[in-house]
Length: 134
Image (cartoon, rainbow, N blue to C red; front, side):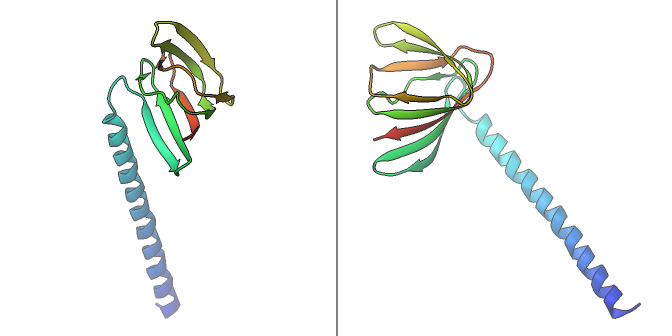
């Protein structure tokens, strides 16, 4: 067997091994992400900070059906981009409620306002990307 065939066989074997290792690593990473998601408190929204500075914070919030957010930042202005739409029920401290229909792709500007909690009263997840002015 020529040296070129041996080198080709060696490189092909190395390449196959590298792809197999990459697949195993990707599966382990996916399993870790699923484990993190499973440890989220039941009934509470998942909030993932994407960027943070002294003036702004950008984060994603995911509401599963029935999840409630009791720490809505209402003392600052916010820009909200709806990544996945659905229905949220806002309940203010005085007991007043408002049902909000969020459509995928909408952009909402909210200024400071009264304190409220937000609950997903729909049947699907609601995902929001929020930029908060500190």
